[in-house]
Image (tube, rainbow, N blue to C red; front, side):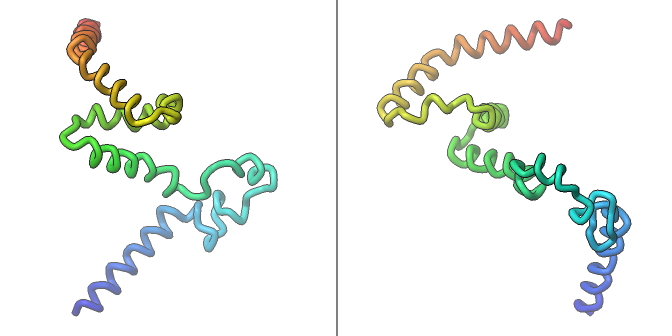
Length: 129
């Protein structure tokens, strides 16, 4: 019974893939399949990641890593750290030692109330608009 269930499930998945992803499949000679890429397209895309997994899943992996390291952090904090990292916001901190990083973190923590007040005021202005 289990094998029959699996075979029906997998056949349904293949039918769905062929129906919905036909244009991207090389086996179907789809419009967007790699077989149809021109040398110009390959050259322009050469610097990009080779698959959608690397492009689509990497932010989730980063968010999971940051969430694990910043235990009990709000999702907005995790989002800010991930987006900041992707934009190169923290690159100037790479040459700092642990004591310098701790001093920066202590400064930021000491200014938390001021930043929170600014955030709340900005949120109120947005709600008024």
